[in-house]
Amino acid sequence: MNTFLYIIIFIMGTLFGSFYTLAVYRIPRKIDIIRTHSFCPNCNHKLGFFELIPVLSYLFLGGKCKQCKQKIRPRYFILEILSGLTFVLIAWGLKINVYHFNLEAIIRFAFIILYLVAIFLIAGIDKEYRKIEKSVLYYGIVVSCSYIIYLCIMAQTSIYRYVMYLVTLIILLILDSEKQIQEAKESYLFEVLMLIVVMLINTDMVVTVASILITLLAIGITKIIYYLKNTFNKARKEHKDRMEIYKFGYLFSLTNIILLIAELYFIY
Image 1 (cartoon, rainbow, N blue to C red):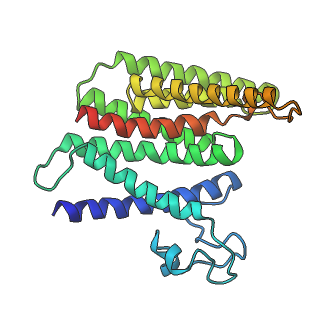
Image 2: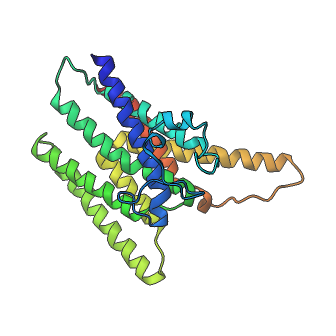
Image 3: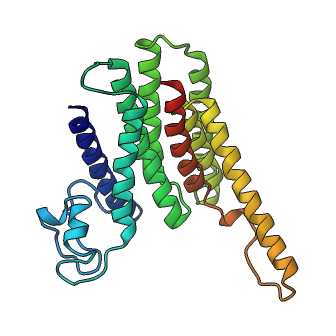
């Protein structure tokens, strides 16, 4: 029975993975993610039912559009599988099974999934455009507020720490709005800081701080390697060495997902 349960969880994860790929493509282009039928971005062919089955449709179609034969990027297929595996790892880490009903674990699983929707979308969009989409960030804030309400009412958790997080979010939102009004552009720094606060609410401080430190350490090592490479190569290659090239939303999110899953196996 547990095997059947985890197969269902894996399938659910692949469905979410399929949604991530759709949303990452559409949200920056201001295309409706709910009412607009799925289509091939190359020939606008509307996808049929059998072309929308996560993982399997990619295999059956040979990684190509049925209509125009344009190759479908393998990352869609990989993301669907990784999303399914992520769901299974989280459920397994929370010890969800059919023989022992644990309401707290199920609710925690639901909130983690809602949180991961924001994190996956932020990571995907930031990887492509170095931009944290405000609509996705606001969704993450709503999920965070809902989680705080649950913790304070149902889990009877101390509210003071979360009030500080919410106050910080409000301050960052005001500062970001002011900058947008004055300079007619969004502030990537404020968006990243708001993302960090959302991470602090939905994962504990250890996971969030570790996500930041590991990411910054990886960036630092990369910069040192580039520097040494160019030092030893007398014909120095020109490369960008500015903080503006790093996609912090993508890197923080990716590290946070990995550490969140790892943490579940130490707590539960």
